[in-house]
Image (cartoon, rainbow, N blue to C red; front, side, top):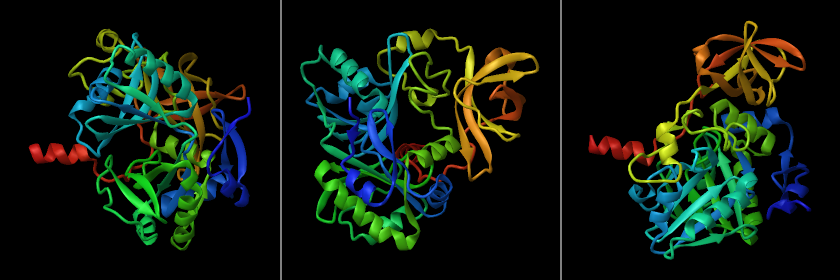
Length: 375
C-alpha cells in the first residue's frame, strides 16, 4: 500500500526536505541536518509536521464518561479547553497507546493518537464504545493537519504572525484562533520538552498556516525540522515512543507512567494494574564510549544481562549517545550506575540516568495551577 501523503507534502518538496516513510506516512526526515534542527529547537524554535498523528473525536452526551472508561485519566474532572496525557490499556494493563486528550466541551473529547497505532486504536475504541449509545467516534484521518511549533521563541514567533484570538497561557490548555484567515485549534503542548504549541485545522488550510509561521519565524531563528530531530528531542526528555518504549507488553507502572493513571473511577485494565507486580523499570542511559545503542541491545552489569534497550540515538545537546530501556528491579538499578551495553557485538560503557536527561522548559500546567489554588 502506498504511504499516506501529508497535507503539507508540497511545501516539504519545495523546501528540499529528505523524505522517508514512517508509520505508513511520507514525512520529512530532515531539511538540513539533525544537529542544526535540534539546536534550532532548543535555542530558538523548530517547526514540525505532525499531520500523521491520528485526530479522533468522541461526540455525544456520553463522550466524557466514555473517555473515562477508555483512558487511564479521569477526563470527567478536566475543565473545558484543557488537555492531558493518558494511556489506552488492554484488559491485562498492557499499553495499547499513549495519547493526548482535549476536553472541547461537555459533549466533545478530542484524542490525538500515534500514527503507528491509529487503526488499532480506532478498532479498540469502536469495540468498547459499542455498548455506549450516547457517543460516536469521528476519525479525521486525511481531513486535518497538525503543526508543532516548539522552542523558547515559539510564542514570540506565533504572535508575530498577527494571529487573532486569546493565547493559551498554561501548558495543557488550548484555544481557538485565526491565522492567515484560517481557523485553528492552538494547544500549548508538544513532544520536545520546550515551550511551544501544536496547531490543528482543516487539511486544505495546512500549507498556508505552515508557510505563514515559517515566513514570520525565520528572522527569529525558526527552522523547519524533520522526524529525525523530533526523535532526538523526545529522547533527551525521556518521552516514550509507542511501539518501542511502551507496548502491550509493558504496563504503566513498569514504564514509569504511574502519574498518568487516575485511580478514581473505572477504566479498562484497572483490575490487572492494581494487581501488577513490576519486575523491571524504564530508565535512561548515556553512553560513555562512541556508539549508538539501538533497540534490542542487551544491558549488562558484569557478566549478567540486567536489561534491554528499547530506543537510542545521539544527543547533540549532550554530545553523547543516549537512549532508554528496561532494567530488572532485581538488579536494584539506580541513576548513575555503571553498565555496559552491547553495540555492534561489542560491550561499551554507559551510565544509567534519570529521565529527563535535560531540564524541561514547558510552562506550568493547568493542573499545577489548579492544585496551588486549592492548597
